[in-house]
Image (cartoon, rainbow over all chains, first blue to last red; front, side, top):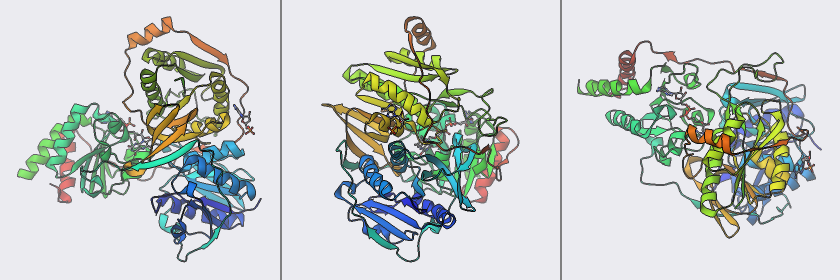
Length: 324
Length: 255
Ligand SMILES: Cc1cc2nc3c(=O)[nH]c(=O)nc-3n(C[C@H](O)[C@H](O)[C@H](O)COP(=O)(O)OP(=O)(O)OC[C@H]3O[C@@H](n4cnc5c(N)ncnc54)[C@H](O)[C@@H]3O)c2cc1C
Ligand SMILES: Nc1ncnc2c1ncn2[C@@H]1O[C@H](COP(=O)(O)O)[C@@H](O)[C@H]1O
């Protein structure tokens, strides 16, 4: 048992994910409070080069061919050994496709408490605490990070990734751990996202539609508006899952991150998974009949009129303004 | 192909959420519970696989308001076996570790080839059910799954990463998969068919074991986030709102 803080590095095809720097930024404060040091835990194969800008005191590197690509079983296997051999005070992951399941498996396997979706972690007089968001960010929950060891997953948006980058390359310590591979899960290949469609991350005016658009036919009105504005239509996950828009148009955690000059959010509630992808927009205008919808916390301007009433009028007015 | 779908009811976020007097839990008196949205996708995926390969599909739920409706509507969609755990309800301060252990005991008895479960729920403070359950029953887990093909006792899954990238993985059965999206939108079922299921299908009610919440954190306080600056609301009807939006777009040179 020691007081160290570990951050498990998330990387995909040679690129460290932003959430890792967010977690490192959060972990820095924890390590200061716990009196331990901050270690980035890098799992991979021939991936030592990714260690350079990790803002940690040292990097614990586990190199194995079985870790060349993310595999929940192999990651959990390697981390089981690392954590059991010398348990740190706290292990941070991203609340992501890689981090959430790895942390969950370890929590059950090692009987270690897991606190997921933390916005922030803090320390006062050596006592480590968390603030986690539940119910789509409508409720926050505060508590102590359980002793002696706790697992944490972090959501983005509350620490700057830049704070998790280091100016000097940390020492890399290669461990002798190899994941015990049970062979139950095998990585085969990456399937690339479809190409050929426009790239919504480089469009300056986005008309974004959510479930409030109600049906596929109404999407046409959004298309018409986007066309009049020289922009493009994108949407929330449910709209894409319904097949009303192609996957390439999804904004958010599982979709694209966009930073347009104008983001017109129509019938989108503003779930954290959506906001993650659009909070960098220059100007957000939200239209949602529910005045309490979280999207109004993100937007600069809003209206609670019915989007289906608004769209025809707006299209007409935009067209008139362009002609005028 | 026998498939089990454990489901979870969660607070409907459209409603106002209130914190109760204890300050560490939601006030359940006004709470409206709905089926976790990704569980609907897990259920749909189970039905698609059942249609392709035969076998049975079972749904497991804890008790609670609205649970019977969820169970009967899944029967109307094609689920064979409805299991309701009685004696404990959603909202009873059960964490996911406890629910995973309760569901795990049933999964072990049913011995399915696949357990399909929603990848997460918005109130998973102590981790999502899927990986916890998988580990308790000793099965492999892969989450964020949006495609599943089964051939020769092996399962090929599509796992989502941000930006639309997908990893194709093979998973040995039996396995627990955390479903993000089914291969088709969840099917609609008419109320009349749900009513019919209520008359013809029976609920398999089983008494829940004593819950074990070990493995989750304790909560000191629950509160609502301070709202930062809220959007300036544009007054008026759609004509006026459209005019203001056109003004805003005009200022940025977009019209
Ligand atoms: C692991 C994971 C990853 C996810 N990734 C993403 C992601 O990348 N992108 C994403 O968007 N979501 C993602 N989600 C889903 C996310 O949690 C939300 O469920 C989703 O963003 C909600 O979409 P929505 O706002 O369109 O729908 P809803 O939440 O249903 O909101 C619809 C809104 O429309 C309003 N409305 C209805 N009718 C009208 C009308 N006529 N006029 C005006 N307003 C109206 C309603 O008041 C409501 O607020 C993910 C979820 C999970 C679990
Ligand atoms: N197969 C299982 N099904 C249900 N619960 C289990 C199972 N295995 C372990 N548990 C529970 O998980 C907790 C941790 O178990 P263990 O990992 O064996 O220490 C204990 O409370 C067990 O009751």
